[in-house]
Structures are given as structure tokens and as C-alpha cells.
Image 1: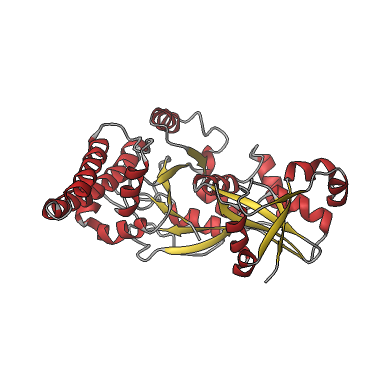
Image 2: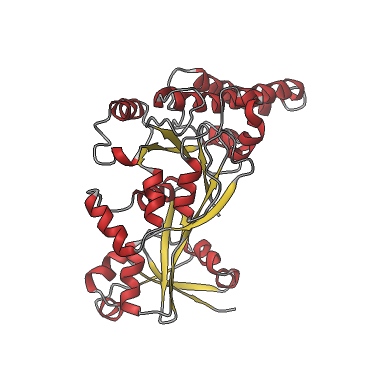
Length: 365
């Protein structure tokens, strides 16, 4: 299962956010390094399409697709050199597929700050720089090893050396937007070296509960948003404490409070959805009287590979898949009527699965 790592400086609201997302109760303390080993939680992805399909079938079970979140200890300046157990924490980030970078955007006498005051741009760049410095060290070590191996395989070594030097240039550039369009060979090296600063990232601008109503008018927030926009870094504004409190309420009280705060929905659901999309994950559905279920697949996967997500036997004995798009199901609001209208399609093993497809796999083992 692909996972998103929650990172940031100490005391910025990472563990509170993790608790809200996963409905857990990990320690969220007012001192650095309360989290040492990463906490991991599997979270259902809310999908209105799944609920709409389930209304028609009225199944015994409704099963959401899921995404994994990991709460990683706070990084400090010098982490790439081992400060604050930095090397250990950086290794935890290497294991995740994407990053949720929490940046605190509110002052509080009750919550200490490792720098003594709150400066979102500085705080973001502190962590971002440590990721880059760690990557630069990794690339330098690789270049040294290649120099030793050049004689054995000069052509291959020179190609990799050229790619590593190009990556190094990007890391040393002034821009924070390191997520550029690279060729296939460069992406391969980035993946092999597990480079941190090239992982897909979404920034969580963590505000106080008091600032929810005027979140975009706060000077710190608006200045930080401008900075993120200039660097093409996606973000979401929320209060991790407020979102955590919402998880402790009944559905009725939750809806009433959201109305009072003039919010259409919990921002957590939006964060989970955006994290899912950031990982280039999509959803197909299987539906019947026993169960309506959402399944996660990677964008660009074929029908036969999606069949194996359900069970290896389905892939082994794959014949065809009956496919109905969610859009057609929504129009007809009934599988039988959609079939009568000729909207069901028989697709082969090389069919590229579309997000929202409702699928029945025909197979014989």
C-alpha cells in the first residue's frame, strides 16, 4: 500500500493532524521529538460515488479504498548532519511515497517553537533545505562510487554521472520547485537513490481554531500562500486541532459546527483526497448484493493488472471484463437500465482502466 509521510519541524501539529486523520491517540506533546518511531495509520478514502452505487445495490457491506499515513518525527536544522536524530528520521521519509509537509502559521504562548517564533517561509525552507542537503550528500557519494567503477563500464557510468550532475544542479538552484519534468532515465536514478526532495509534496498550512473564519486574510498565511504559488507547491489550509475535535463529535454536532464555521466539509477529507490523487491513484468499483467495494489502482494500469488486485486467480483465468462507467451509472441510476441502453462494454485484458469504472471480471480457472 502506498503511503504519505507527515513531516515538518517539531511542535507544528503533525501528531495532532495524524490523530485527526487516523482517529488515533498518539502522543502530541509540547516538546520536540515526542515522536521517535513513526506512527502508521490506514485511512479510508471517502468517495461519494461509492455511496451512490451502494444506494442502488443495498449491499451487506460497503468497503472504501484506503491510503496509509505515517507520522514522522520533527526535523530540525542540521538534520542531514545528524542533529536531533536527523539521519534516522530522514530514513523514515525515504520509505514513504509522498510527503505532507505541515507548517505552523499561528503564534501560541502554550506551544513552544524550536526557533522561538513562527515564520512559515523560514520554517518550510529549513525542512526543505535538510531534504536537499541529504540528497546532495547521497548524490556525492554515488558520484565517488561511479568514479571507481568507470573503468569497468565507462558508457553506462558516464550516462549516470551526467544525470547525477544535472540533478545536483537542480538541487543547488535557488528555486524550491524541484519537481520538474525529467526524462525516464533521470526518474529512474531519482527512484533508485530514494531522493527526498523530489517526492511529491502537499503543504498543510496549519492555522489556529480562532483563525478559521479569516484564514486567508492573516498576513503570515497570505504571504506564505504567495510563496507557495510562486514555487508551484500545492497546499491546503486547515486547523489540525479543530479537525481533531471534529473527529470526537457525533455526525449531527459535526455538521452543525461546520455550518457555524462556514465550512462545507471537513478539510481532512479534502486532504486525504488530494493525497490520493498526488500518488496518481485512481478507483474502480465492484458491485453486487453482498458487497460494493472501491479498489485502488495506479493510473495507466490495464484491466488484467487490475484483476490481479482483487485476486491472482482472476488474472490467471481472465476472459473479459464487463465495464460500466460511473458517469453512465449516474445518468441511469440503475445497472439494468444502463445495460438495456447498451452502456455496458466488454473489454479485453489490454483495456486501460478508467477512474470510476464499475467492473465485473469474467474468468475461468
